[in-house]
Image 1 (cartoon, rainbow, N blue to C red):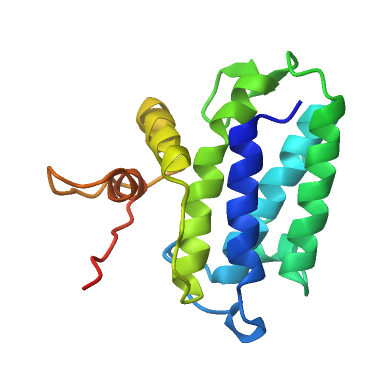
Image 2 (image 1 turned 180 degrees about the vertical axis):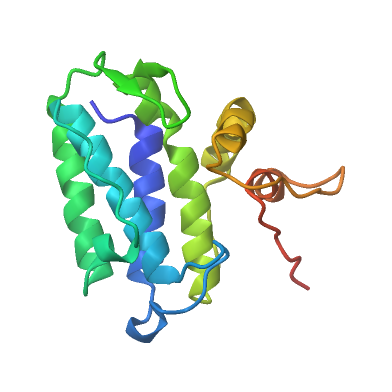
Length: 189
């Protein structure tokens, strides 16, 4: 069964992806060196890797260019990857072990329960790149922040994330979450 938080995070990413004007897929994103299509491709590739883990197959190679997973129709590729991973997770043995990118392993269930972190952060990235307001579920942001705090040091040590930015003591959860991944939320007036 697909964890509710993952399904809600996927809904949020899809809402942003569906709002991308066709001429904005090349817009630069907050992910250094990436455009909007790269962000979408990265998330699509990650869903394909989860699908492979769920079906017991080998994880696909991570493409050197994340945009390649987005193809010529990033929204269509996103929707296909989402449908495939949802179907695979319905049938998966969630006790199956999953190797983590920074070493160690956990069950597929634990992995997908923590995966909204990636989706939430990249939904924000995609919204920023394409001039959309990032309307993110506060409960998902809070959960993603808790997960980020648990795994940031290992991710940073493995070279998967950059340095953390400072935030104000009174910052809300979203700026705190994004700061862990080296992003800054610019206050709106």
